[in-house]
Amino acid sequence: MSRTANSIKNIKYALIGQMLALLVTFVSRIVFVTVLSAEYLGINGLFTNILSILSLAELGIGTAIVYSMYKPIAENNVEKIKSLMKLFKKTYTLIGLIIIALGIMLVPFLHFFIKDIPEVDYINLIFIIFVVNSAISYFFSYKRFLIIANEKKYIASLYRYAIFIAMSIFQIIILYTTQNYILFLSVELVATLSENILVSLRADKMFPYLKEKNILPLEAKEKIEIKKNVQALIYHRIGGVVVLGTDNILISMLIGIVAVGIYSNYLLIIASLTMIYGLIFESLTASIGNLGITQSAEKNRSVFSSTNFAAFWIYGFSAIALWNLVNPFIYLWLGGEYLFDMEIVAILIVNFYMMGMRTSVRVFKDAHGLYWYDRYKPLAESIINIVASVILANYVGVAGIFLGTMVSTITTSFWVEPFVLYKYGFESSSAEYFKQYLKYAVITIGAGMITWFICQYVVDTGIISFMIRVLICGVVPNLLFFLIFRKNNDFSYIIQVAKSQLIDRAIKIFK
Image (tube, rainbow, N blue to C red; front, side, top):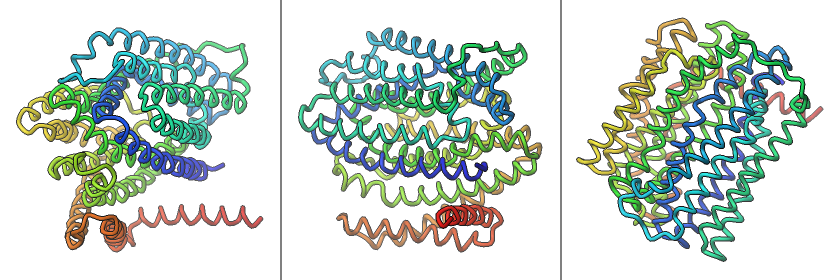
């Protein structure tokens, strides 16, 4: 299959799976808040964030090894792939054991992360289940990366979403029949183990050489290259975890666990969109990695421009829709007691847009293995994020924590990441990127203001009014984007790719 065909198939499976998973998650959340208290919702979000910090033990090793696989896969060098997979297995087994050990050591100190300890039974056991669930995936998941690196991510997606949907249905039944949160979590533990075992067995079937015992050691030069990338990725892992994984912890420590529960609903919506869109772009990573090896810098820059344009359209439209729809949706979904003020919502949406506009840059950086050149950026980003969030939280509460994220992004990642990509990946100036970024931002704001103005004529809070708002948000910004960019080269390229895939699909159907 061609790179484009593989990418399209990966995206299709990921999108369908995530949409179904999202639907069942919203139903599960309704049952969750109906059966259990807001404190349980807060605990769920807090412990998830703590485990994301423990995942620092991974140190970015997986990303470094996957990048090292692109060339041997393109050259069909089975012996080199076997050597890399052996290293992967040893490393990830050790990481899983480290996470279990760190999690157990952290149990006596849980009260430091919660401002007011809620009346939740067996809170230590609940945390241990979270730890084990996180750790066991490392014992098997290294084989998943080989499937993904071979541009077959749709296979991993099929297992992930099928098991997730089945798990969620069982969890809903358990909540309704037993109201037992520990049983609820135990189902997730079984699902995680089952998924990883099944994916591992599928990888063994797809790549029989994984069972072979005659594995050559990696050359010293290759070990040095992987070690260099890991050293750089350690900083990136720290930055990613601190910026994206500490908001719930800071809210719990500075504001309270109930506020964590309220934020978790906004996070579910925003993170679901981020995940869906991330799947689209991450599904391109293996193909882009192959592209980076086989094509010129100019060709890479051209493909990046089109990918970045797609990111603008997707995240610009979504930011506009969120501004007009997120609070009315949560009101209908869970009730008015789970709403943030619009000032806080605005900050969350700006952060969502800025993070989204970084997606294409990050995907190309990862695919080209450009980890070393901005290795210190995540440390600066982390320090700025924590300091700014704590200081601003004392003045404006929850909003200050999210403002801290915005400040850290603008002062670091916003300009450093594209600078590195253009200088070392495309061998050109990044000035054109920032001009495009400004243009896209102005158009998004303008389209957003027009959409918001029209939505103000819909004043009721019922389901019909909400659907009218959905229609407005679906039509107005996309129509404006189309009118502005209908003659744009990047838009034409994306349409051309889409048409070619539809034609190929029609030919296969009628053969």
